[in-house]
Image (tube, rainbow, N blue to C red; front, side):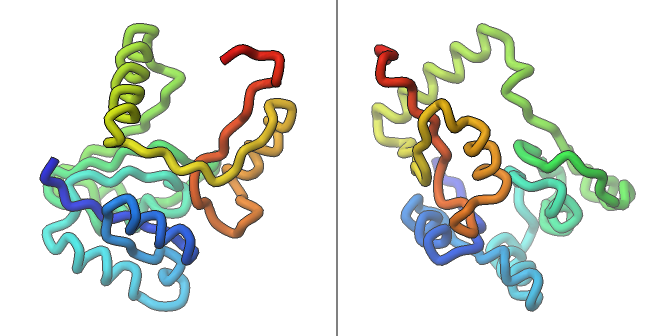
Length: 169
C-alpha cells in the first residue's frame, strides 16, 4: 500500500518476526541501556511517524510523543491500567491526535465489517497472523497472564484460545 512500516520488538524472535512481516525492525529493549532505540526510530522516520499503533501506552506514550510527526496519530490499542505522566503541551505544536481504540465499543455492524475485512485479507494472504502460543479455552486465565507478561520473555505472536473438542467450529 506504499507505506513505510517500522515494528519494534525486544527479543531476537520478535525482531525476526517483524522483518518477516515486511517491516523495518527496531529493538525497543535497547531503550533502557542506550539511546539507540529512539535514534533508530527517528532515523526510520526523520519527520516523525504518521501513525503509531501503541500496544503498551503505560510504558511508551511519552516516547511516542517524541516520535509522532506533524498532524500524526497515536492509536492506543493496549495498556496496563495505571496512571502515567505526560506533558499535554507536547501534543499541541504537532497537533497530535491520541485515540484509544477498544474493540468492545464497536457496533454489531462494525464488527461484521471488521470480521469480513480480516477474513478477506487472510484468505488473500495479505494478512498472516503469527501464533505464539495456543491454549485450551479452560486456560483463558493463563492467556491473560501471557498477554501481559509472556513466559517466553517477549511476545512473539498472538495467544490463541482453542475451542473445546466438542465444539464444531
